[in-house]
Image (cartoon, rainbow, N blue to C red; front, side):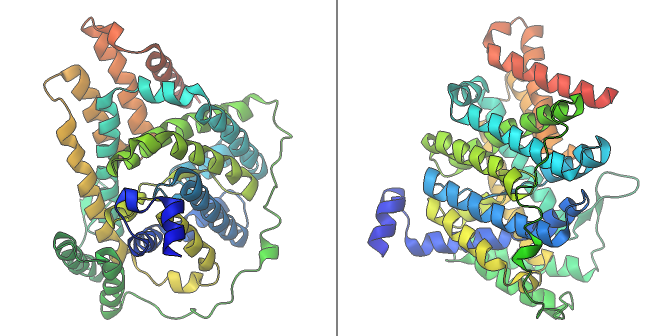
Length: 432
């Protein structure tokens, strides 16, 4: 069996083992499993039945991880993306007036465009048109964003009424549990203890239980029935396909999908020193996003939390496949999975974010026309709480600064087009 896995996923050539990959996949699953509950609740705000949304989230995550694992052979986890799900429910449905069935059709068509880009020369052109400084900045910005998410999940910081971020109550049991779990996590990580993140999840759950943060009631709930899901599967509606609103939604979603995932995939394959896998990973991402509309959910992305799997030793697609199978099993254990508290997950996100922040050393801070747009990306991704908006601001500022100092020729034509599209998208949202 090990020989078969080695041939299929090239384990030896990537310096890893079956045990390490499976362990990394498990870590990735426990880090991202919250998406089942969170994404489902956000989709239900669009009118999708909650139980159907849960099934859609699970099935999409299973298929996305398997496609990434077998096609691209990288440890990137594909699940419905945070932020994009909010765009789906709150912007496309509640603000723009589309039905959730029409919004799923928007996801499908945006996915088709994404697939065309990923499987054509446009993917390479777009990737090459993005300057090295902006690519590095996206990775750093994602790391800072991940740290912020971790700090919020742990209750250490929270959104204040008079400020963007406020310090949480240090005497709060959740904060104390998070701090204790973080100390354990960072010590285990620094000592390179095998399975340190998985140990952190288990120990962190026990610590949370000791602080009275876990309610063990309702763990015997029956699994959801598949029949509840069938009213969502393939429920796309193209009745409004000729309207301006429909195509504006497609434009906005496509912009976010393509450029957010270019940054995410580049950051992930760079994190494991396998940049040659960018093309296939990007392609797997596009196919998964296309299928999301059919399965009944907002599009998948190469989630930031994939870095947890990579930091745990994941280097090949076996990690993603493991996570995919665990998502499949999760349909029967959703009540148990819900017991894992935020205080057990938050320290892992904080540590991974810190690792990604180290890429800031690759920026040339002496050239302000390169560093200033990069710094804006790093700052605006967490400050706007939007990966897409943070990237857009840096992409718009970059050509402006180059033109201002007489270096307009250093900017590729493709980047001018990208910046113009991002600017148009901002203007549209302001006037609407």
